[in-house]
Length: 264
Image 1: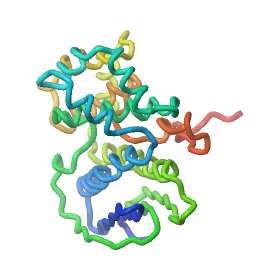
Image 2 (image 1 turned 90 degrees about the vertical axis):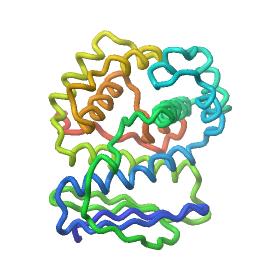
Image 3 (image 1 turned 120 degrees about the horizontal axis):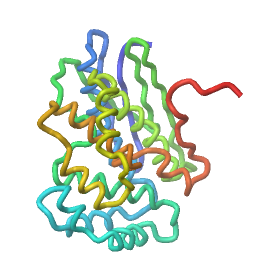
């Protein structure tokens, strides 16, 4: 398998094909490529999940505040919960997906990056467009990293299954983008735990967190990973991932924890 990153999707008019040649790439090139493809897979993972994105979008657009911190501190928790309930309708167990999209939209509205963006990294890895047909796939190899995720598309495929494969792809891209930036993840995770110690998840608590992040101590990539880690410590993941679907759709399994599992 050549050193490359290839993402292809052909489903209900959404046609995307990107092929990055990584044969001469360095890790910054790979971080850029994974982040760029995630910019496509992340919103599409939400699109087919089965809740009303429009209700969430409308609510977020109506939130007051000139920053994500101000908006989350000002919003009524009961109003958010009511909106999320309306957005999922009878699919009550999709509330985690609607909430993940809510945070994604709040951060996007206020240009607050919680994920690696391709604009944060220069890259010289060549990319060409491809023309996929009737499939969704991620094929990636770079040194020891290999990722293969595929789904054939036919008339029996359901939207939530497409959301599931896109979420699986997106999880991989989000994680590897951070890995390949080579930021000191251990040090930043330690700082994130200090910032969130004793904090219980709530919209105002996330707003407070955003107001105290010590941005002056870190560069953009480091600060982004610090925010990502702090949000994770509070069980907030503002991106499309399988666990947000797994309670509603039992055949979508969340990923196993990273690292070796203990023997029985």
